Length: 176
Image (cartoon, rainbow, N blue to C red; front, side):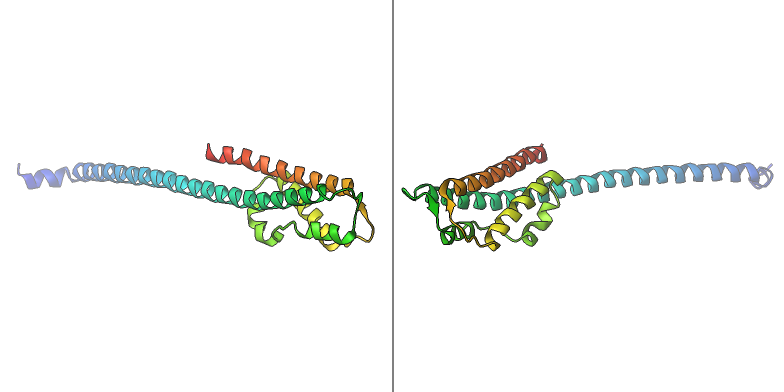
């Protein structure tokens, strides 16, 4: 019996064995490709997570800088008003100047950064922003006592301090 006759008689078996070997090779190649895709997916998720952490950190630093500036302006006004002397009332012009000296960016400047914060924090920030905006735009016609003005400024400053404290707590979460 020659080799030719063997392959002719056993062709189906030989073809089946070759098909089985080809199937095993295809399976192994597909499995290797799937594992490579899984590793790549993990790497992409890690890179994206790192990017989000960096952007969140930048957002926190930007908002903290804004709040630090507002806090500094409020402190200056508290010091100026507290040292006014024996007067009991403040002239409306002085009140308006005090409020206008508190600088804050327009909401459009910080809007994207606000979207990264918790809803309660955003609500508190917008409330603080509206209070300053209202004081800027609403001229006072009557005299206000120094103590009343100081109370308003101290309350606003307390809000700024709370917002900064919440940001610092978030910074610790982001960095972990």
